[in-house]
Image (cartoon, rainbow, N blue to C red):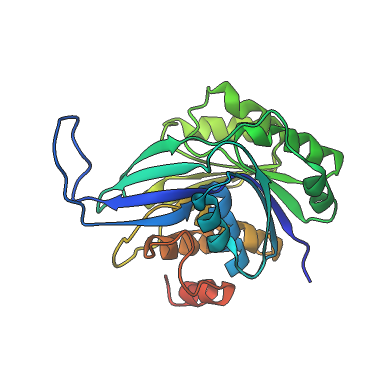
Length: 296
């Protein structure tokens, strides 16, 4: 059986509100097309997708002592996922995501992530000792895990999301990572940043562009481009980046070449946006390969 992937942070309970258009900054009453609650955040998204693709996952997250935590636990109670929850006095992280039909999003962090003064890292240290690699998300509380992974000599993958190239919060994660993912949303000159990261000794950097696909740069100087796979109808773009990350990582661990890894990431992301969940219904590695053979 394959070794587990350890993921540090985070999980939230989200309220998704689908609108005909994102609101303008004026007083108004809105009638949503639909609304629903769903588990959210980047750790949960990666865990659900990787587990569906057949990888064992240990997810560490912070949860409150509330009904929202119970709902998060229930959503993550899936085969292949072991949840290590640190219970805090802070309520469980909660978002309200306003969505338009094109996938545009305004996220309201109505209950921000907890940042406790102390965390019991013993169970995480134990999990890391026997893992394949560690995915450390950019939450403040997760910073000590960077040293835990280094001490265990484990590769670190991180996702900088909409990094702007300057925010000092991200630097410890950049310094510790072996492989870096990010989006180009706030980084127009992303290719220059990617080259700098590789020059600093990283193995891979992947920059996603939403519906415009993704760009990869490897340590040997190989630039690769991956278009997004077309989908019939976008249901919910929440979690698409985490799905892409998961499809790519699964391919990488299975020894696929980089272009195939990009293909798998793109298909996984495309399937995600056709679902209201962070991971597409009936997702499997076989389904990804079937979509590739069918041309997406």
